[in-house]
Amino acid sequence: GKSKDLLTMNQIEEEWKEYEQVTEEVIERSGIERERFYDLRGNHDNFGVPEVGGELDYFSKYSINGRLGRKGHVHSVTLQ
Image (cartoon, rainbow, N blue to C red; front, side, top):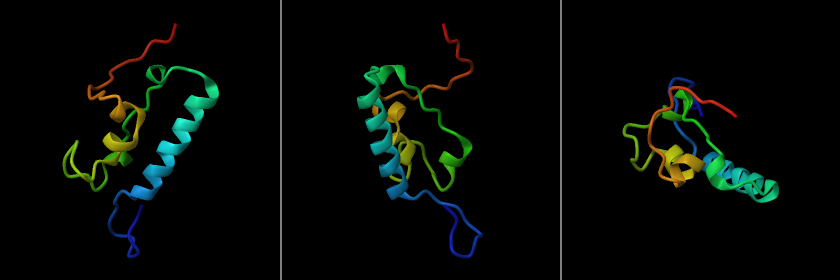
């Protein structure tokens, strides 16, 4: 989110906790294995994150990929 002065960006941990809850609910309701889901880190997921895997890297902490330990880059995805 943006700061009150609208000059800086940072991650809001409460939003990430909500994201985790929503993705867990989708996984549970769908019956699809967690490993079949793939959430990608976008440029906004890097705002205010000085180091991947650090304490402010909420994508690594709350995303499906982060919790599964997926750290590689995706160059293309093929659905079959």
